[in-house]
Amino acid sequence: KQEVTQIPAALSVPEGENLVLNCSFTDSAIYNLQWFRQDPGKGLTSLLLIQSSQREQTSGRLNASLDKSSGRSTLYIAASQPGDSATYLCAVDTGANSKLTFGKGITLSVRP
Amino acid sequence: EAGVTQFPSHSVIEKGQTVTLRCDPISGHDNLYWYRRVMGKEIKFLLHFVKESKQDESGMPNNRFLAERTGGTYSTLKVQPAELEDSGVYFCASSQDFRGMGTGELFFGEGSRLTVL
Image (cartoon, rainbow over all chains, first blue to last red; front, side, top):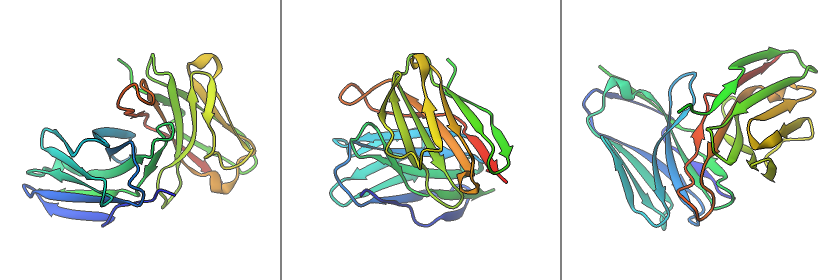
């Protein structure tokens, strides 16, 4: 059974800092991994999707990496801004009909 | 292009009552998913439609939950009768692609918050 862990549950950093959010999963047989952002009371916004054959994906100040063999992914946020404050969720698709297994998320607060 | 839309955004009902949640996927997306997040837990899969057919309903908690997708367009999720533990946020997601035919990226709605008193 796939399990996804995101630690810590919350993180507070000063504006401008580069930061890394971690995600680990127990079963390395995945189809893809997605990082989502959720603002309070809002839905999930897809940030990056990494296919199992890829090592990383980049979008603007965001970079996500994937190491299947070790069951880890990281989301790197460069030059953090207060607008980056949100909950970041990691989810893996184990290849069964795009049925995602989610972590509990990391709530990020970027202080001005 | 409109995203995934869900209605209502928030519903407050008493235990034993019935609630129906609706999801309109992105136009042209054959795949529609329901997920749920209960307080303090991670988001969990409920079921998956491909067009009007249920592809996987292994995540449905029990037979008080009924999902339909008539005509392969919008979907409804009915909870009858509602129990206290059904409280949470119900998310709908859709995707255009399916196994081997794309990235499998899911697009989520803003969710329907259900509070059962």
